[in-house]
Length: 430
Ligand code: GLA
View 1 (cartoon, rainbow, N blue to C red):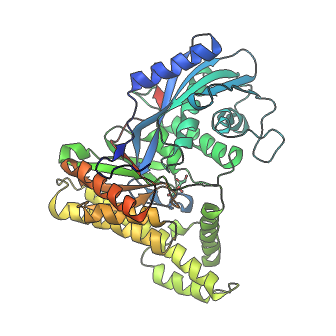
View 2: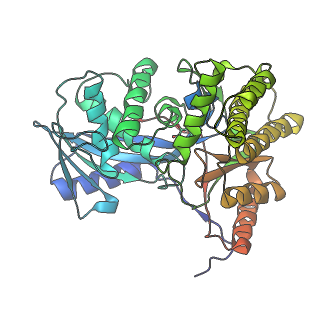
View 3: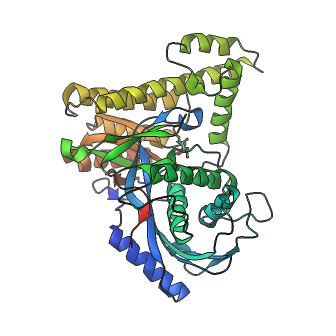
């Protein structure tokens, strides 16, 4: 079957009412009861600052309108029953006293680990005797698209459990408690690292729990501090087009972990805790040291040089882009060109130095730029997943068509597109 390049496919976000209704209906159908409420949490795209989070650097994510909706009801025992639209026929039944991390006898499989795992991680962090719960999940965050579909599950469970168990960490959607949410971020990261076995940093969960509507989140991963940077692209006649390459993307297949391990090795050789401790000025000397370091082979040393150069230059680019967004001038003309150039340079660094792009990502970025995007780059972990392009609002369809046409001519599967409007963080819907 071939999809015509003249009709790019957009993945729409559910409206909150629609998501809440669908999750409630699934809950009623399967559990024959009313849920206590529906909570939702967004996926994210990162504007810039990639592979910096586990290095203590800066990232700049926004929350997507695409969210996971979780209808949930507290139980009086320690049982957890889970169902989703994708596994409607099969309810996962778990016991909070028996579940455990990946590789242990209590290992929880697939998506259920992201939900039940949050209760497990909360208890590991000192919250005792959580109640069990029944929950029904409906999500419109594309799976495996590098848009943090798993963080959306974790964060929807975190705010739901927080409320039904009376933990009081998250605050309300209107008045979020940011310090409490930072604690929930740590819980969700632990879920991802230990229950799902993905050695990720905290950017995705921070975005889902701590972003604000109409803003990008400047996240300092060294101390967890955040700044909400106004990012109302529509008001500037612009849009952020997400291109889901549909190329396989996994954070547990070793490539992501290998990048992280290389960064940690560089930091050890340089005698610093995290690569974010290295300033752009210190970079040339540090790279010389890495080159001369006693590595197994010259190839190893070269890899450390390139990984380190990406991280340090990416943090500098992120700082620069945030400063531009905050300078009070309209996002147009030279300023728009400068923002686009930083995005382009980020992609180039990820392609050449971090080696985590792939032909589908590179094609998406090149085709978007050729069709008039101001800047384009891969977003998220890479090795597949999604790219973003900063485009004129009126050019979205045309640029999407050009990317779809480039995919067709390369023989790739058709990509999907999303409109990335900076949206609200995790919270209760109904
Ligand atoms: C994935 C991880 C994040 C982050 C990005 C790369 O999305 O989950 O923690 O490391 O990759 O910036």
